[in-house]
Length: 220
Image (cartoon, rainbow, N blue to C red; front, side, top):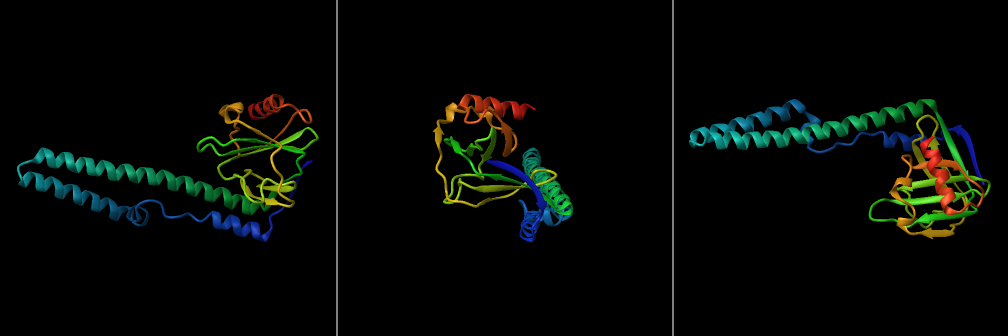
């Protein structure tokens, strides 16, 4: 059985989302704390290197060393700035979800579990058959097997607007996989872009039919 409901965010879920919205320091402390100061230090070091090269009668070598140093510093700065922009956008998305105050809950009591063996760092890939023609896919590096997951009864909590994963809560005993397939039996192209996907196929369908249903849902 797979059932979807909507409810209000609990206080614990609000605290969890607030913790996730905290923007950590990334990379050089100088760049993140005071960009002007870091830029001034970079220019000062470059000027000093060029001056040493001129005094030592190797101006070209000094210019090359200064240029490489500046390029490395600025390259790291732009990368950290890109990462910080992404984190700020993530923080804004969480703020919007907190304001909306709603979550989407997917309750799953699977009749069978199809597991794809993990290959290298691709992450886990689970297909939960609800037994009623509805299927739930959970995939990604955050959803590996644990002492409590997968289970015979669990719920997936997503934010209502942007479908951010709040968490997965086990409500029943652990349930072993019904079918474990090799990595090559489920091609990487079958992995959906989203970590949590609901789709429909015939009840208790063969693996090939299940994958066709997943591909159709991802394409739609």
